[in-house]
Amino acid sequence: MHWQAVSTERFRLAEGPFWDGATQALYWVDIAARLACRLAQGRYRYWHLPEAVSAFIPCERGDALVTLPSGVYRLDLDSPARQPALSLFCVADRVGGNRPNEARCDARGRLWLGSMQNNLDEQGGDLPLTRRSGGLFRVDADARVTPLLEGLGIVNTLLWNASGDELYCADSLDGQLYAYAVAPDGCLGPRRTWAQPSVRGVPDGSAMDSQGYVWNARWEGHCLIRYAPDGRLDRVIELPVRYPTSCVFGGPDLRTLYVTSARSAQGGAALDGALLMARVETAGLPCQRFAG
Image: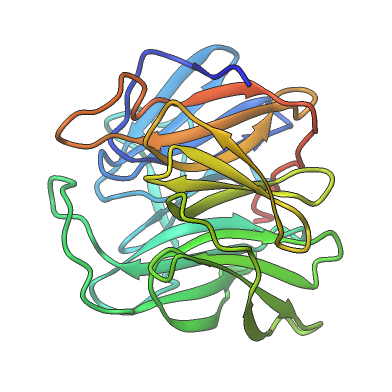
């Protein structure tokens, strides 16, 4: 597989890639640098936000959601980079000292948001994790928030099987990918360990392909791991970066795989912090916009 950097930019903590099929645009964030980024028709844009931002997801009505420690906000995409127009949509996690991490929309366009203890200082540097205070929340188009789980470490990976009755979710603090049954009323059943363990890094964000296989970025593992629908380790895809954070399928045929990555303050490989891309044989599943 031939990996190349999409651009010359190198990000501190790039995360949460989202491919918007309607506009053929790629959205992602740099959590530590407080940037919401978009690449559309070869044009790179960013919005500098007042807090760390963990997700940037377009909405059906034409704006986008950004997830900040103080809440979930709507971002006017016509606003300038240094003066982004934000309006508070809801507050999902009200635990003091927490911040959002992973966020994805299900097939109905509802936002699922995972949180964690804040681990970033005002300059975007690392803070120690001392508690498991994270949660999982569902946000409907009318801004109604439903708490689903609590006592989590670092929520990563939010994906659903084809029928929507099983959720795949990682807790990076545990180093595990779990599965939860999703009841008709939206409640979650008991968790079970889903993925075959690996010594290659820690599970971070993921994408699902059209065959139901999960491509999981492995923090500090220099790779993606492709898991079969039953959680069996299918193959390891080597990467030219030490800290891959997440991935998404994009392009007109959903056969371009984009991978976000982070870089260490102490330096590292030339491509650390790059947004990577490569062509793959199996198409991915499309991302879902927020319904509101």
